[in-house]
Length: 242
Ligand SMILES: Nc1ncnc2c1ncn2[C@@H]1O[C@H](COP(=O)(O)OP(=O)(O)OP(=O)(O)O)[C@@H](O)[C@H]1O
Ligand SMILES: [Mg+2]
Image (cartoon, rainbow, N blue to C red; front, side, top):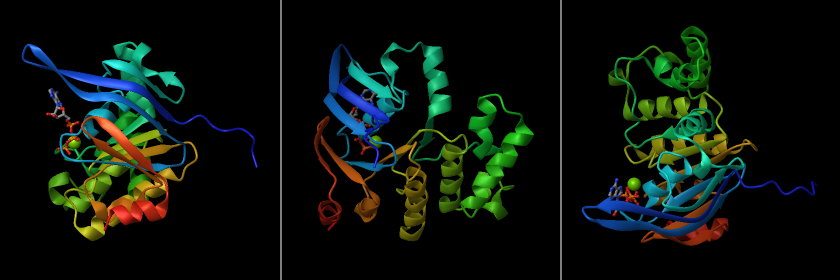
């Protein structure tokens, strides 16, 4: 057994977010403390509008916090210039958005290769790596197809491949199973859970779908811009889904 306790991959402390609303400002996050550990899959759940997307966007460096601190892999995001923040997102974060955000004119393999090309790899080499990831996800036969030729579950797997291809330390997903049938949703979650098993990676998934609660190592509940509790007992997490 190691005596070294690894620092969490993601540490949020006192995170506040205000959005401008006309002349006023609207506080949507009220001081959030949250750790996401290496090797874990954390689910974030809560009613519509409670701040889930805002929170994961801040953790991923897409939005900045109004107050508080976010550290990812030991780096404080608040101190980074726009350029360094863009580099942080490119290298450290994999995103899966609800609408997948695939580029319609690119093939599945080209879409999945985008993070590699963005960091300067040659298209041919990047596409080859992307094809390997797609094969692992059972998408080998579809690697040359464009999104419009794919089903919802297949597009979802392309989005997952794109989030994994550059081996990021932190993967964030906003409602990855929202548009999927039960079987495709489970398959997507199995892929994400496998990705989270890497001891150098953490995965955070926002969901409304109680059918996937069982995949969580921990589950954070949010309400009105606050994390109200974090469950880590499998039985307690399962009980929520009934
Ligand atoms: N860019 C913005 N400008 C102003 N208000 C915003 C902005 N983005 C989000 N909000 C508000 O912040 C609150 C939290 O929004 P958020 O999208 O984080 O909720 P959510 O928990 O992800 O909801 P859902 O489950 O419906 O996706 C909402 O009241 C929303 O209207
Ligand atoms: Mg949302």
